Image 1 (spheres, rainbow, N blue to C red):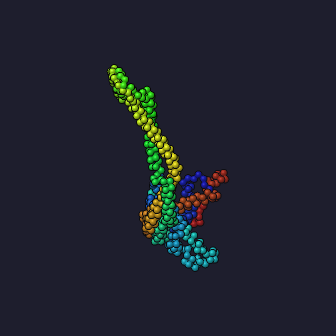
Image 2 (spheres, helix red, strand yellow):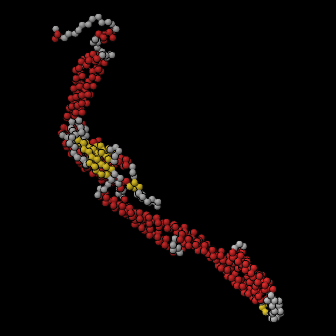
Image 3 (cartoon, rainbow, N blue to C red):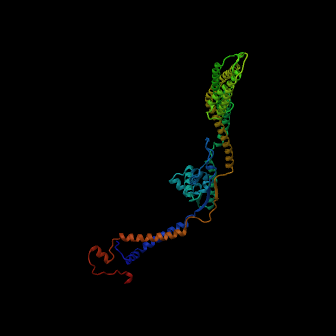
Length: 504
């Protein structure tokens, strides 16, 4: 039993149970020391790998889009490092290392021939002997337990270590693991059917490209399309525009000529066909007629100019000035008196008739030209409509040719890349670099004798004292007057000390 004790009471408990305390303390220290001294030392070989961005991290799409001109690079380095760690820790790689090094060398205690006669008899009597598969599973479990693969924080480095009782075996296992890992790394990142697929695909695409080009050539010959529809459309639109401009100009000239014909016919009705030449007249009819004819021409010209320009135009003003001059001449001529002695055809009328015939011929020619231009415009419109239908089929075939050509060039490039990749795989050119190869360690990592002894002393001391105070807590004996007064509620009148026989 323990009450609120002083230091004296604690010392009393310590001396009371000193034999138990010493036993537990020395048992703990001796046990840990014996285990540390008698257990086999374990050595740890280590190596470091650097993971870089390489061709394994480059993704090239199987079907290349038109707008895609660059490859896709995976820049998540942390994920790449974690992926490589999982490859290093894979069961497949562990089995390959065990098979390469050998179970007998790696874990000789699993070999039934080397267990000893007593161990073999004991196992055969109480347990059945493990099969080869069970032995492989045990070796795999021990191998994975002794293997440590970790990524160094804030770096692209992987730290790989392996523990074994033999330092040479530990280094050999780790070097074998890294060598097999480099091969496995290439196998994991490479598609085994990559080269075969990209070797056969260009041949198929070449046939498809040739067939598409033949279809496009046949389509061009069928519809007479030597160039692209865009170029043909541009040419037709330009020619149609030229024809339309010519038609507009012709229609304008036709209207002007028709107006001139109407004016000439109106003036022709006013002029007599014959003039009396034998009769004396007061005036010179020929001169007056000539001047009037000139005046009529100026009036016709004035109307023509007014159809095109306003009255303030310089040409209109010049014509009007000439008209004023002609009117002055006409006034002067009418003031003169001449005598005529014969008659004949009116020259002015003949002149106007000639002009009328000429203008009518021009009018008929312009009408014929307008009709021809209208027919030509109709032809151009029909050809443009046909071109709209041809354009759909043409560009469908042209797109098919472009896609097949692009795919053919792409797969041809991928085939070349696959050959280069295979050559680089044979040379072990990867994004993994070995920083530090494994070497046989000179010092074991366990057991740590000094640390174990320090811990055993600490644990032995704490454990033995805890045991002593625990035993005191459960002890029900009354050994001191305070215990009697506390439990029996009676005062102690006297106490007699206990003397040993040796003190008599």
